[in-house]
Picture 1 (cartoon, helix red, strand yellow):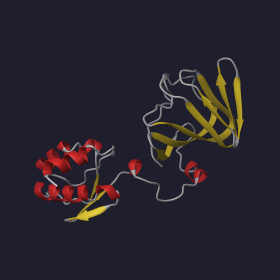
Picture 2: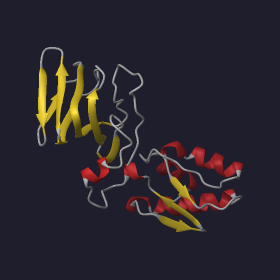
Picture 3: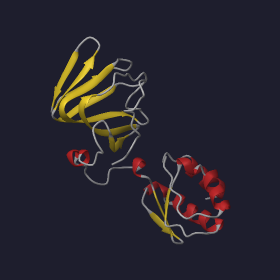
Length: 207
C-alpha cells in the first residue's frame, strides 16, 4: 500500500477523537495532520521524540489492519480506535449502572452509538428548559420513575417502560417531580437544550 493511499484510507475513517501523547516531533505532527488526525486515531504511549519515519511506519501498519478495528502495537506505539466509532459493542451495557455514573440531573452521558445516533442516559428532576430541535425528533424512554413532557397544548405523562417521540420543531419541556431516569436516542452532535441554550446546555460526554 502506497503512502498516499494509506493516508487517504486514514482520512476516510469516521473516527472523530484524537489523543496525541508524547509526540514532540513537529514533522510527525504535520504528517498526522495530513492524515486528518482530527478525524482519525487514538494514540497512546508514544515515546517523546519518536522520529517521523517511525510514526509513518506505525501509521502504515495500523492502516493495513484498520478493517479489524482492533488495537495494534508497532515500534512501541499503541494505536486503537476511539470508543465512539468501534465497529461493534464489545460488552453488554447496564443502563442503571451507567446512570449511577452521571454527574447530576440534566447532565447526560453517552452510553453507546447506533449508526449516526448516540444513546444517552440522563437523570431528570425538576423542570428543564423550553426548547425545540429543528433538525430531529426527540426520543424519550423512561427507565425508572415518572416524567412529564410538557407541550404547548398538552402534557405527556410517562412512567417506567413508556416512551414518547417529540416531533422535530415542536417546543417541549421535560420535568419530573421526583428523580427519573431516561434513555434518549438522538443524532450525534444534538445539543440537549436545542435552540434555547443557556446554563443547562451540557457537553457530549461518554460514560
